[in-house]
Image 1 (spheres, rainbow, N blue to C red):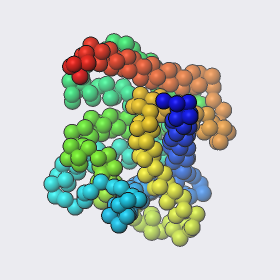
Image 2: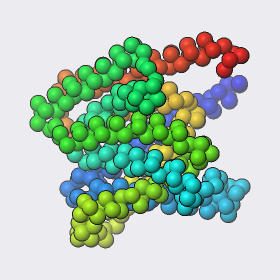
Image 3: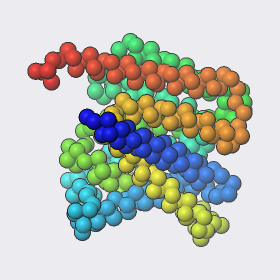
Length: 330
């Protein structure tokens, strides 16, 4: 590989990582504004989530139509959510997907952006537990040690939020439920991917389409329909522009996540995501002018360090397992 080619590769990776960070951070701040800002003042989190899923579905449908009309310029895997066989296989996963995004958004509604990372920091821990319960995968002692570090950082963060008087028990609970739903979705996704020919974009299309339907009765049960119809900003251009930006960003996260993994690796993606969350926390404290104690920052650094150490330990274990198989047994 020439120096020019290598330089181009580095530039490509940098652009993708910056794109992922930008879209992900913008999504969090836009959603926080939609869920709990005084300017929006709309208590209908399921409706906001539903609109974002509809937006993602429409984008996927538009890409599909463009791919069929201009195959040389656009590509999108063939498939339809109306297929009965696909529905039977994918719908149970879509239920988990809906649960995951609803819990994540409800967590963000009740907690500050600065605490959002801590509130959902036990995803790695629950991934270890659920992988053992559903897949029988055992975890090494070094990896378990990293999980204990993450848990200690989580509890320290809760303690500091409580001392500051800003702890939301409801938001923390939703964060825990979201942390359970994410690894549960990842585990079951592996079993569903063959049904969509291993096409991540097609699975995203189906998940958003089915979730758009799933959330309708939930919105009705949560009495959000009259809230939305009587909302004072229902015809506000600002409101709908912000809603649409949130929906487009939600779709873009999936795009940049897949792209980041493609141009780097799953390990680098995990490290990038962890570092992004830390940077996001710093931005949030400055944006909202929040003063945090030294121990509060220690809790964040503890979770960050534990997460990165866990990623490193797992990477070394995978490398060792690959080496032990030998080139003829892979």
